[in-house]
Image (cartoon, rainbow, N blue to C red):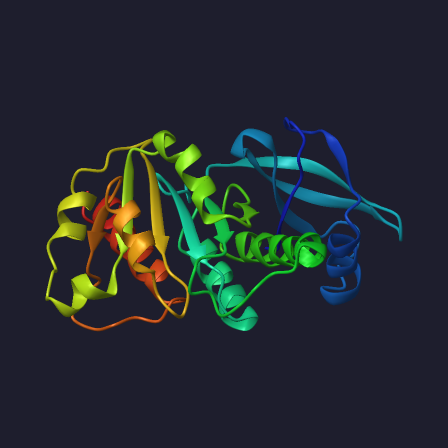
Length: 250
């Protein structure tokens, strides 16, 4: 069944209105659903209900909750992906796949070796597009929440909030070149439910010497296997490693 999100609290046998235009279009025009068809909606507090469509109009779709569903699809830890901006199609692909793999938050930022520069007057439009990509990926992958995303024009802003994370992992190309393969495994084995993890990866040009020096003062630089990964691939590798350790091995 198709899945959607509503930012409301819900109980069984309540009626709600889906008013988001993209959702209305998808339900009525793309999926061509009719009254009495069923969809799945995730509400506040990650409560999930099977819902029956009551009425469809151009302004809203009325639904009724008919069955509570027990769904557990979120990572036991909160992973934030902080990455230097990369070319649009690659960055959007990373957002989509990282959402599917369980990332909780995204922070896009400009680093010293960024190839891509985001003009301030275009930041709001870009964020809206990224939010749409993340929402659709969350629906497709049966997430219980939609990951957040924000943009930091100044990378150094991260040091103002670094203390809120239990672990800071830095994907460092030079660590991989030196054959370092143990740090990531050792870290993931320490993670426990509720931990907040910040994963930092650079743009296509990698970290500058100044950036990696400051980052390693607050986090752990790791190699991601014997191969050098692209900027858009590194976050997916780490999310997969965390999922394997916490969701498949325990």
